[in-house]
Amino acid sequence: MRVWILSCVCLFLAGCGTTPTEASPESKSVEKIRPVFSADSAYAYIERQVAFGPRVPGTISHVDCGDWLVNELHRHGLYVEVQKGTMLNYAGEDQEISNIVGFFEGSIAKTVLLCAHWDTRPWSDEEENYDQRFQPVLGANDGASGVGVVLEIVRQLALLKSQGELVPSIQVVFFDCEDMGTPTHFTGQERQDTWCLGSQLWAKEYKKAISSSSESQRKIQYGVLLDMVGDAAATFPREYFSVKYAGGYVEQLWRKAYDLGYSRYFTQGQTYYPITDDHYYVNTLAGIPCLDIIDYRTNSRTGFPQWWHTQQDDMRNINKQTLQAVGETVLATICLK
Image 1: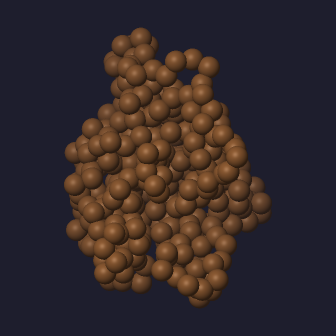
Image 2: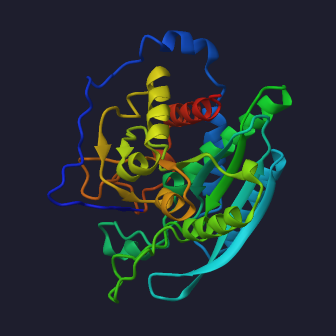
């Protein structure tokens, strides 16, 4: 993903009220109906992905992890297919893409998109040590954390459905080649749209399918993208493109986080710089309102945590309390009637 720095435009829009730092009074009643989400299970899902090694497209680790993800979604009762295709990469060459797409049949007339990217970056190009910049990123947080939370949400929805509870239908997409964007060491002419290749492919195909289909019940109402959602110090501000294209859903989810007592993570009352992430193409190409839950740091040179695109993106950066906050908030929000 990439942060857009807009000069001469202030995107730090203060909210009308004070920023809450603790749970709202309403959270006392929410406690009785908190959704069940297991941070231990989400952590195990992340750990399992990391055990494959860097999931760089074109490697054995990528293939093996992809097979495991397909089987795991099948295990929870989803219909799964792997969307294959190619897109031009940063060097103008064909890049093979394998998006993992699953559908969970719910019991109410609402379909929500839950998505994350499952690939990892081939280069650690934010490393201070030059020799390490050409090594692949392990991607515990940048990739695996979002996938792990989505898998746990799906597991919980399957359990709820088996108990006769009313749950929404879920379209799961694990995007490939999100992190294949132009490396800092590339000296050629930079191409446009080199990040998020998998979501570009999926969004275009979705738009075609919806335009030619009469199955309106399969149309996705809105989407939630999870990216880098495991760090102990994570903060999830309201990102510009999320607010622009899916503002009502942003308000709904951040309000739910506030009610559940997670304002420490989901910062209130501000909109931050636009980020080119998978949600941008889901919004602009597929036409689905989609918000991004992404760890953004205002005190960082890159806008992201120090371990971003380095050799330090490992399990040390995965915190169960953060996973609980994200997973519980998303699960509670998508289950709203």
